[in-house]
Length: 200
Image 1 (cartoon, helix red, strand yellow):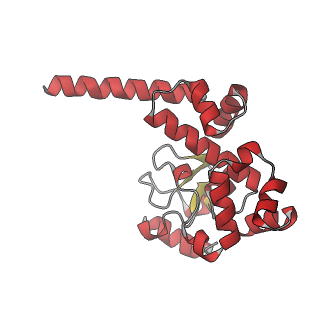
Image 2: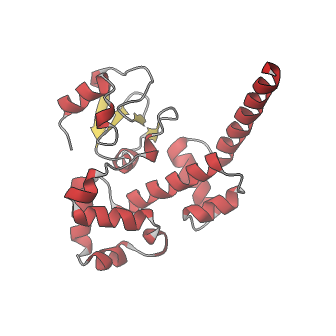
Image 3: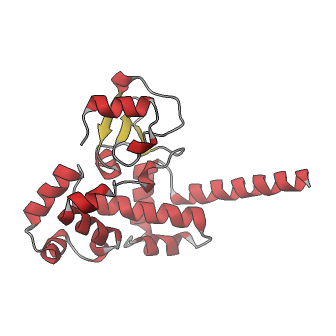
């Protein structure tokens, strides 16, 4: 994890070179963002920095709806410099922890469960389980934004075991159910269609 001053300077200048290397959490709003977020800059005394989206979510922060930090949770550099963590992340992103437990993941990597958990705390700042939850929510959010699938189908495709757990995870993270995102998308599409017709 980069030091506070380095993160703060990069945030204040909205440096794209640091996008994905850290995430800014705002204590007053309980929202976390990417360093390139276009929203008004919070006061330095009100921010803290995290190495991953999963780490910020573990501490109760919600993703910004403008810069969508949950879509870029890990820096690609992990794959080259932290081989075991990189392999684990690929397996989790592929849905391994949707069907198996952390012990199975550790066995697949050839290490112990405790060692895997220590690696995740050191490099990601969150547990494998929290990381898997973040990936599931990312998949679900993309499906909500980019497809017309029914919400129940999205829940299962994203890796949730039940619609109840899916709804609870969305409310816990975003403070609103997934159906609300679908309604907002429909209203936005209707508005854009109306604007095109008006210009024509």
